[in-house]
Image: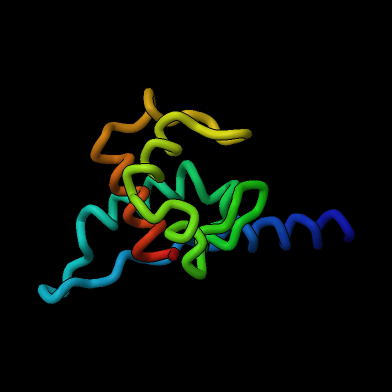
Length: 110
């Protein structure tokens, strides 16, 4: 029974999704933010939390990412090269993808 309860709790934690990109004036989500969400959900949420509240990686919510990196170029550089326990995503993500995930963390999670 204990194992079943643990599995249910883990399934619930994994089911939490990252917030959607907001809709623009045309009623459609910003395509760059939507792409950033997909990248964040698949590559970042495991360590930084699905809502950016942190975990094994630092938190992004409540303005933390903008406070740490006032210039988005500095944040993109960290995502690209990695830092401490965070891997480099330079070979895995294009420049546009790096920028998209940075924008998502700043504009949606932050």
